[in-house]
Image 1 (cartoon, rainbow, N blue to C red):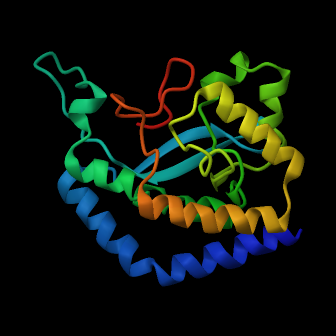
Image 2 (image 1 turned 45 degrees about the vertical axis):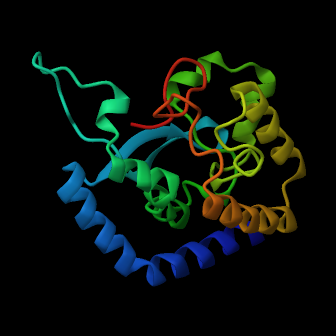
Image 3 (image 1 turned 90 degrees about the vertical axis):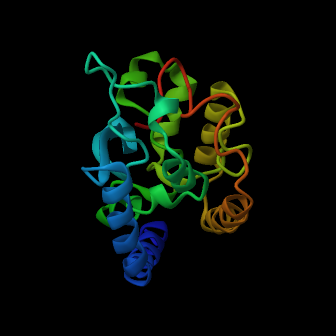
Length: 199
């Protein structure tokens, strides 16, 4: 209950204070990357229940002569890389937090397609509401293996509490400022099994 109250207060205040930034970013995304401005995708939430997660788009819709989408690394232009490295693309997720789909802190929501691939241990990550940031994000972010990331997520589920959440939020701010572990070497997006965690 206290965790949910913290989510509502912080996400609501952040949306209010950051509204000018959100408007400017939305305009820049529309001009530089096209529409729609928001990248929406169905992700598994608490207990694996689906919800629609929102982020600023970071890729163009660039296509080849046959009309097929270009590879991710060709569609991820410098502005998109900046949005990711600064984590500004994540700001719309504050709306998911306010709505109750997500929490400020929790295991990052992956793809619905991964659900059948989880073992019993990995499925435990869904015992907590998914978060904008989490224990895995401050312990390597995208520079740890997917198995290590699942282990970190389950550790959080077993040790979740207000003080741990506050610690994670503070360390997340530090990690983002240093832009640590934004993406794996040679990858435009985060690989887990054999897919991407983003556009």
